Amino acid sequence: MPSPAPAALDDLDARLIALFTAQPQVGVLGASRELGVARGTVQARLDRLAERGVIRSWAPQLDPAAMGYPVSAFCTLEIRQGRGHSPVVAHLSSIPEVLEAHTITGSGDLLVRVVARDNPDLQRVIDQVVDDRHVIRASTVISLATRIDYRTLPLVTEAAASGTAPA
Figure 1 (tube, helix red, strand yellow):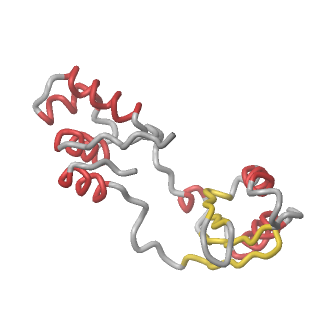
Figure 2 (cartoon, one colour):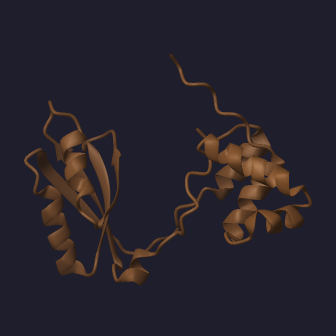
């Protein structure tokens, strides 16, 4: 059964998300004052956005470099076929320096974002990543500079303007 189409974002949703993105500590009352809408409206909108999965977390955004992990790299893993991704994903989940992993198309099977304290530490992390019998091959590129941080606000603005929600 196909999943239902996501409900559209409207201008108030977009303004609410933009406000909490710019001022994460504004709170419901502050947001209601800032946006000129009732406190209950703000709370209901936030609840709905969270229920729909548009807002996935209220957790702080952390900078690995500020915590002593300034080296960032991306590893493309080719994995042994037949067992699926689960064994490798379980292995990767046990490595603290693995920030995310994505199933991909192309020559690799998984794209893994890792961080390290320095280049020798990156070698240690890569050694841990490939230390799984299901990993056949890895290719790693080091990120020299982040030009655009992970962002979703432009997408929210576009979705509200076009009347669609991001999938």
